[in-house]
Length: 477
Ligand code: FES
Image (cartoon, rainbow, N blue to C red; front, side, top):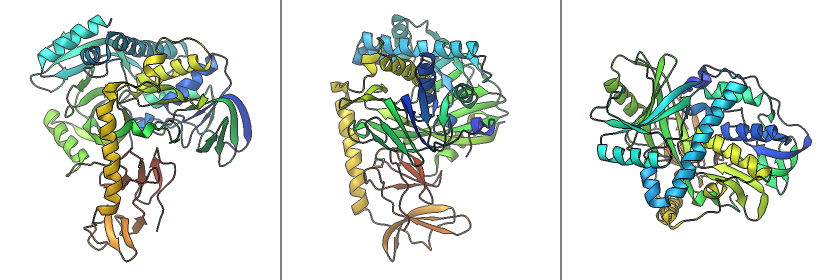
């Protein structure tokens, strides 16, 4: 399950931290947001160190579809109605400036990263909705147009077009920028205490600390887990499916994402909340759709991604919590990690350098609006469900009945356990309880992992940590 980006790019390795050092800023997380933030800070003359738990771009960055766009679904008319014109305008402007900043950096730094200017489209069969969106986007300053003829195989649909957006190879780009930075790989931060970021081999003492770890792993203060959940989605690289000029995404939850890369069309879809896999499998469903849309194509690669979704659809970028004015955060990028990472990098640079930034307020983690309340209640309900499931769900399988290559909660002589039977029949038992806040884990038959429905932590079949906010693996029994 390796993405097309990982398959086509191998970056040089960086050392891990084995000493105690000092810096102006320590950035925790070497994904797109962390590397861009460190790079922007370096341009501003700030001595910055990046601590990455695994490899640069090795988390969600390697699994993105890598569309760089300010078009985040059909949001303009809805946001004007719900959040007001001023917020909607600033959000679009911040993201459009992020697109322009990618263009500038790639041009000025001469980065070879398969960068291509491309229009972005959101398609839908609801033409009235599309018309409303075009009008709203134009009101917000975007030269959006309504298109009736589309190059993708979706019948009866039109689309809203945002011109002159972009796409690239994210790992080629991030590696090129990281070469200019002080980055330690395979250096997970185990603890942050005031100005000190501790790792197994050393520590960094910094005036300011940025948490750019996809989902923040510090629970208190901040409590980001009450305001975010994670969603998984799936991507196929289709060979023999032709080429697309534009980048597309459907307006509906069941719709698809399309873009070209090299000789492939990248088809994305089948999104769901982490820990809630559908019967029959997401890859199988996506392959079925691919066969209908591109009957001549073959699947060259498939992979999945995980996104942090906030309760008001706006990322959290800014001061981490009132108690620690020198901690900062960038998270909750919804499905738009490329443009949001650049928005975060520029905003954090300004905040850390004491400069004014017109977008600070709309992304501030301390914001709160009544609009969030229904989603906050929903998140709370999901957490309670995840916790109670741990105590009241009954295992309905035995180890003997498990198919090779599958896992389940089973009854063992020692009690309830999570068991994974490998293809060769090897048995791995884990405690199927999430070390983050104790929710019951679900088996993910697609990825052979244990996933948490509460906030999206994941562990492989043997219990090894894959994704936060949990910071450790699940105990083997
Ligand atoms: Fe929070 Fe599992 S991720 S309880």
